[in-house]
Image (cartoon, rainbow, N blue to C red; front, side, top):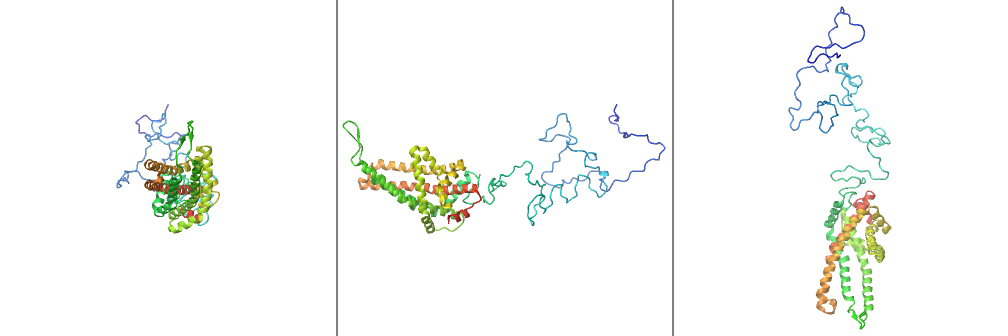
Length: 458
């Protein structure tokens, strides 16, 4: 049978007690002492502290109804006391009823104002287990230290790996400390193709006045001369048919063929040295302008002349490897061209094993380097297609032997020079794209910026 009064009753129920019954003749107990000053007295509720505020008022959750996003356990009509909590005055908790704490004392489980929570560090105090040197500036309240262990839920840092920094405006996660996300030349790791393209276009805007004369003199001029030599030494004559129906080569065909390829090979070797000087000079211009250093066209050519011979030698070796791969099949030669595309910047900045370093850079971040180099080669392929279109127009307009007459010779030469000029933007894109791609790969290996790369050029 229940000891509780019936519903709606207001009579107090004496608490059940064990032991002998109380003496009815004993004097009544003294009146209860007044409540301590710290206990709020009953009375009308105080004024709303948020009445004078504007904007949204704070939302104070009530435990009488389920909250949004929190499941309501089955069979629990109203929450009452949250799970894991105990009511004030419960003996199993560290709480105490207001009347059980003497004035001037802090209830158990609470901390006085200005005292750090248990397990936390006061401002200006190094965390427990920290090796911070004396004089380290305060960092505010710090969480409990976990010596030798990461924070709960965090992963151990990989030895030798970059410590990721907080992502946000102007920052990228996963890059080495010391990298400037706003560097005009070095694209931070994991920044993507957009910032890479922006740095390429930025380099063109800064240096087109110096890069354009370099490209015209060292790239377009050799291409124009080789195109004219092709017109002059191209084998003449057409295939004839013998009485038995077999094709007959024109007289002197093999001599003309050997002369044609001999002239082109000799011109490629001679002009290759000039082109190497142009690539070195253009790299010097792009890097120093990104570092904010002064750039003069004469100084760029002097630097290119100093590096031309070594770069020319490595260019011949890489070209030989690409041709050798193409002899087996087109795919191996194309693969070698992609994998060794960064040999030029590697030689200019590091001056050691350009082929090996370019090969390792390509395969260590295969997708990234392949995508960047593919964009550069796509621009070069477009320029080649345009040159082929111009050559087709020249052949249709002036015939296969345009040098036999003055008028047709002038027209063919003009179109050949025009086709070489159309390739100038492709040379600029190749110059800038490979340098920015190399700088991005260096950023994946350690801290680097435009100033350091400019110093490495010498």
